[in-house]
Image (cartoon, rainbow, N blue to C red; front, side, top):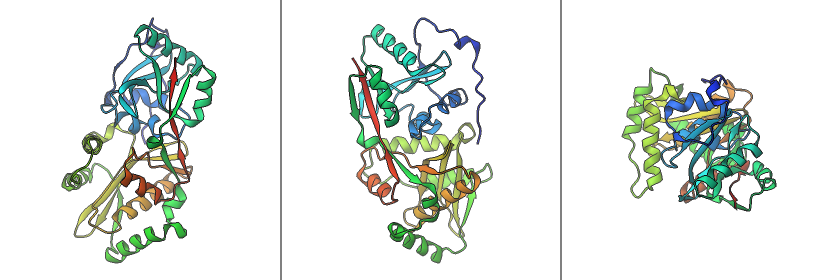
Length: 315
């Protein structure tokens, strides 16, 4: 996994008079990664994938000031409202919130911090937050990575049945890391998958972003694996990002006509990453965005907990 050194240009060490935001693009990945590592949360919103894959959807714009990253965009639960991410960097939260309050006063808009992890809410309340709003559809599903790497236990019986069927029908299947050697096959496989009829605009956006990642994979700090079946080629793939003790799975695609392909890619990717990074304890499979099908699928994997998020308002 690529990392960027935390070396910030001296031009950002003296605060200008006000925050000045620019569009966030993949060109900014190397520059923002060190800040995201300081967020101290397992939430997917503070990872490269969580931020850059969704930059266009939430219209993220960024500003680096005083060794701190500020991100302006839209509220996760209401795309008509301007909102900010929790600032991350060298400045204290009190200082960075005050800077956002000054910016909002100058631009005549309310200060809303969106997708704030539960563990930071009380600190914001102490800083004068006037309203706390939970975002149930945007809570991240957190799993014990060892559980996903084995699918052990009674609650996983149905999932293991799918796995057993897959192994019986495809005993010579293999799992391989995604590299320059096979990325072309991964792209071809993904292009062959059809988006189910009636899917949401968000699902269409996700499809476009996966294509964008596959076309610029070297720019993202992702690691991926592909599931190969002799005679069929690649039938599933997954990509994730390691942050501390957590693997955040940003992409997981499979041929749904092949029974068990989804369970196998989920299990074997968790096992592959755990073997490579022994410090991993959890897997974040992100939120369900209010999609009932996604909710059922994520709940069926027996999450350890839901990482709640909130909108936090300042008068």
